[in-house]
Image (tube, rainbow, N blue to C red):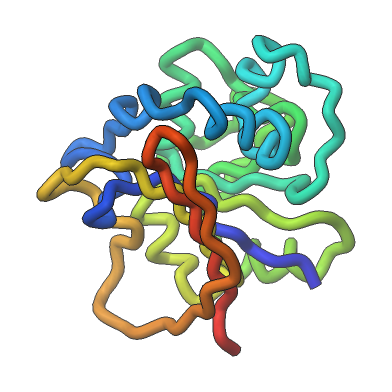
Length: 193
């Protein structure tokens, strides 16, 4: 069975963006050996434009072959006139407001997103990358099999949480911790089942 991995950037205090969901301030940390980590080990999670800029557009997918993101996350690409930001992956966007997909590579999921993820998990293939945001992650919290949290060395104080959901406890087991020269720490957790 395929797994759903929430691969997300967060502040030390657990916010994935400011109160409006903006997170571009994290980009200053994508440098040095952390940038090399993306280019060599997390290449599947890079937007297609970044893969092209780094000359690794033809790199094979090794962890993920599918991505799901919320409408607000997808809007960032649409605002830049990019309709398929992860063209190297099968793309799904959870949205009740987008009626028709602007790109043949992008499937709009307007109904039961949990049911759709459960269907995808039953298919053969690599993992499913949950890109964000907080509302979608909250809806899919019980379906998340793995957390990969890129903790950036900043404190925001307030903002968008990793999961926008009612209180509930979901236990995970720490699988690995890796630190980088710029202060970023990547922790990988597996859900306790």
